[in-house]
Length: 170
Image (cartoon, rainbow, N blue to C red; front, top):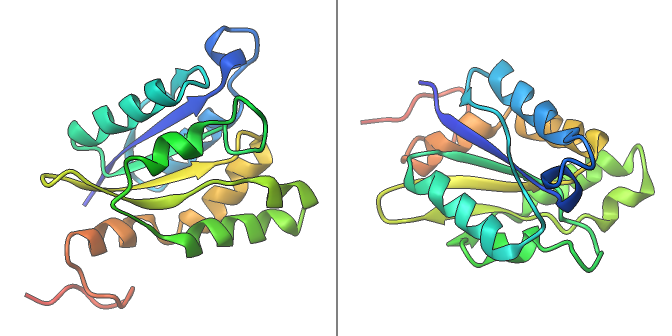
């Protein structure tokens, strides 16, 4: 089964066309390579209300996987994590920890990412959301960790078995 996904780039500079969105296309291409239905990244400024609204709109439209990129650091305009936190039914901290650990192999700066992983439950749709760093390397690290588990996560949200190799029982 193919799931719908969306990438939301959170960057004042990319939204103002001052800076090219570099991480959003990496995530989009990676999701497409996994067989997910995904369009071009949505590019927004670092505004918590706009980011939360875009995430919620995507989930309300039936998107099952939301990857944000950017706004996960410690700067004054890094608000993606706060925008996401308001929407989560619960966190899946091991995923975010695994992405940070993958990045630490390459750069000590990956420990500065505050990105969250979690589940949004609207009552009609349950979706997985992850806040990837805004760098190309951070996006690639996220895909390396998420690639093998994304569809399994959504399958589990729908009640599938925990074993990656065994189909859900009826």
